[in-house]
Image (cartoon, rainbow, N blue to C red):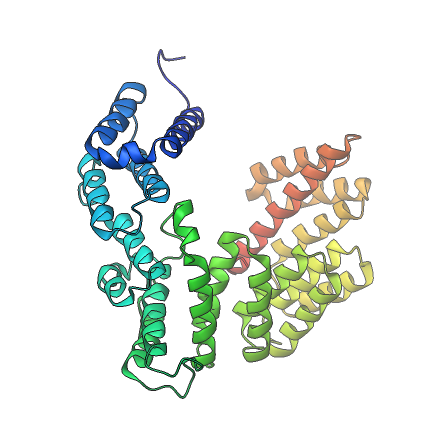
Amino acid sequence: MVEGWVPEALLEQKIGLTKQELMEYIEKNADKIDSNLPVFFGYVVSILEKNYPDISDQAYDRFIDDVTVKVLEESKQSKDIEHIEKLFRHATRVKKKYTGRAIFDIVLGLKLIDMGRYSEAVETLKKYRTVDAMVCTAIAFCYYELSALELPPDKKPDKSTTSGMALSSREQMIELVRLRPPVNRIKFPHVVQELRVNKIFWFMIKMATDWFPDEPEYIKIGLEKAKKDGNREMRGELLKLAAERYYSDMFFLRDLYHFKLEDRDAGGATSVVRQMMQQHPEELEPIYYGLQLSIITSQESAYQKFRSTAITKKMPAHIILMLDLMFMIVAGRRDDAEVMLDDTKKKLAALEYYLEVLQYLMADIFSDDEKRSRTAKKLFMDSIDMYCLRLLKMKEG
């Protein structure tokens, strides 16, 4: 081992522990830090330079970002915009990339929203609309709240509200679709979550699906965020809405199928496959999912039916061979699976190295170690699934 070398994963763990210790220090010394920010940031820099001299610029700046927002979180002056600006100026000066101000401006904008200073928030956030989808929705929310101020206290903006601010809110959501900024590009610190950034995002996505019922992109953007956040409740709600409005769209049908599979809802997944076949009778993708579902549920008669259809529709022979092998594996028919693997090796000689890997997985699948067998079976099925999807040139759900 090279002297002084530390694997990246271990280095990240060590940096994480240092960061946690510093967070605890901030919690206990918030007033002291507020009164002398230059000294505090000098202390932070010395910690990084002494303990992590080879840290990447990105990791260095991320450390500064997280620490800075923690200071804001603990500060008794967190509603003093002048103090916030001062804090962010000091933090920006010690970052490796002086241009790395975006996260601070966005946090400031969200803080202004939390304080009800919507016009100022718009001015702070508007130049970052392409950075993250959350910024677009935050700006739209500001205009929505400003439009509400133009109405009687007991009334909220709706489809009939046509004031300038109400229209600006809708325009920002149209811009979200036009610009299509990344989702979750910014790793917001904990304090930002407390500023209701996620609630704002979902509120505006729901408003947009009401304002623009014929535009599927809002549901797609929401689904992307729901999957990245692991928010199954919201994903389910969006898929339900998509099923009502865009019942023939394979993008949503594909996602709904995988959602049902993840919930181990075989009946629901079967209904989605049936709907796919009704809406797209000439495509191979629904037939593939029917084969896959038949394998998962070990329904041989259903598998044979879908297999016959696949042959009639000229599904690539590679895929059918692989799925036949998978069916035998899942059905626990080891002898048949071994015969089929040998036959597949002869027919698909170009895949020799890949099939050798599958053979090793098969040995684990039929081992007496239950945990090892279960893990190997999942790897085997996922691998063949990815291979087949690539061969069919599908997008993964």
